[in-house]
Image (cartoon, rainbow, N blue to C red; front, side):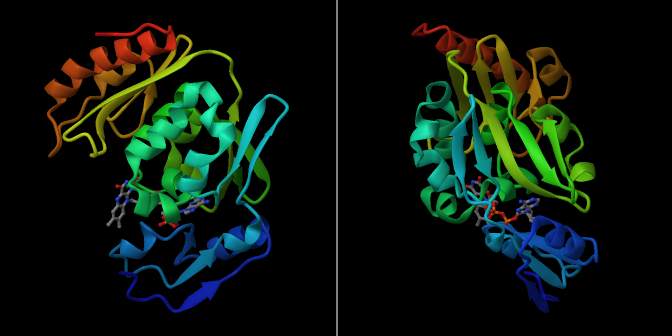
Length: 247
Ligand SMILES: Cc1cc2nc3c(=O)[nH]c(=O)nc-3n(C[C@H](O)[C@H](O)[C@H](O)COP(=O)(O)OP(=O)(O)OC[C@H]3O[C@@H](n4cnc5c(N)ncnc54)[C@H](O)[C@@H]3O)c2cc1C
């Protein structure tokens, strides 16, 4: 709970939101599904991003632009996303979050927060997505750069949109989880020959060899299990991307 929450801001522009954020002891509010569950007594005000007009999905010029305040539900159900890379992004969203969370959680909050799971960032990484931040001037960066130093990039900045190239390359997504409805322990996504692996370490990475070196153990699986299962998931994702059917 945010026990010291005293103020609520509704900025009109990303620059105004960044200025408020830089005053300190503040937090950005997307869908609130993670934020309002945090046990954090340092947050004294929230900055609601709803008025910024960041709830959009625009397919134009060979790419799909996704506003940071787009809910996961809207994104998973959007026709532009259903046809994008064989629909692996929509599949990853539905695996990552149940319908109750999808209805409120936003793209920006999922990527900025620490509880959004590995499926969505892994697929975005494989698809060659880019992230746009307001800092307050717009900064657009490859997804791998964003993930490699997320906390640094988000210090005094907010995510405004994610851009995904429209590719006619086939794609694939594979995961392993404790139960079919549970979140992935390890997952792999492939777009053509580009492979991303998630669930091995602090964030998804491109390529299998980097993933293998960072394998962690936690309450869901040991590092040994992760290293054992990940190559099979990579093979499955690549096979799907090649249009092969695995037994
Ligand atoms: C009971 C419970 C169950 C959950 N179950 C799941 C689950 O099954 N699957 C799942 O994926 N997640 C789950 N979560 C985690 C959480 O709901 C997700 O990570 C969610 O996607 C966060 O999105 P949001 O828009 O609600 O973010 P918020 O809660 O609004 O924000 C999350 C963090 O991101 C920051 N933030 C928000 N928007 C931006 C932005 N545009 N730019 C920069 N920073 C921003 C906030 O300041 C905050 O630090 C669960 C959480 C709870 C409390």
